[in-house]
Image (cartoon, rainbow, N blue to C red; front, side):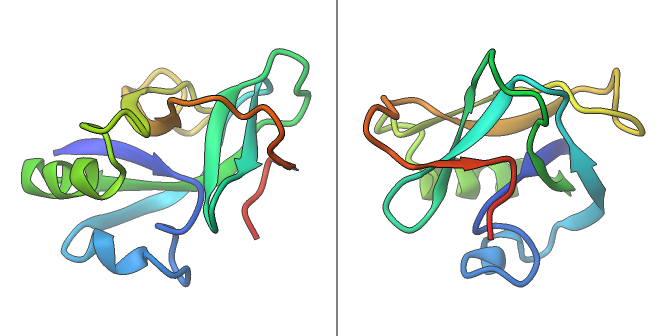
Length: 118
């Protein structure tokens, strides 16, 4: 089991939440400042953004190995669309190893969504 921060369509009530079937919701979470979401093709991408002052909100899930493998395929890790790697979070998750899907391509020309996927 690993902790995974989701910030877009995988969240509860969103279009791709079914990808988290069988996994356990842990709680709401937020990154420290320094991260932003950008509009892609109907979903957001998270990137480091040194000028950000608010961070990104999302959810933390406990995901088993089979779930992470399924999500890696869904998120296009092998194709270089996203990469799964650690992300710092504010309390109560500060200091814990929590991974997320970082957008791995350029956000040039993409709309800045700030810190929340709507």
